[in-house]
Amino acid sequence: MTELPKITPAPNGPLIVENPPNRIGAVETDVAGKPKVALCYCGASANTPFCDGTHYTAAWSRAVAWKVCFQKIADL
Ligand code: FES
Image 1: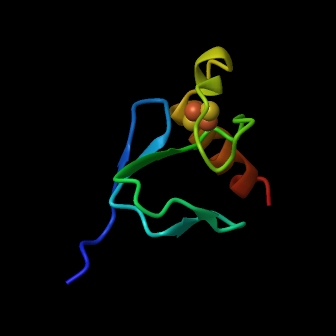
Image 2: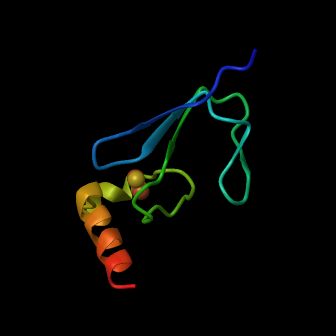
């Protein structure tokens, strides 16, 4: 039986995916055999779909990102 992926959001950082599927992201990047990957959640990575650490320099905050998202929905 195949073990399902486990996704854990890092505080103000990427989504940590343990046991990822063989292909990931819109362009289906091959991650076969990797036990764990970090997916960019801030949208600033130059290596999408993976986190490259840019969220540190971008001072990105998940709370601020959600606030902006909810405001955009409210403005519709
Ligand atoms: S979450 Fe790390 S670069 Fe986007």
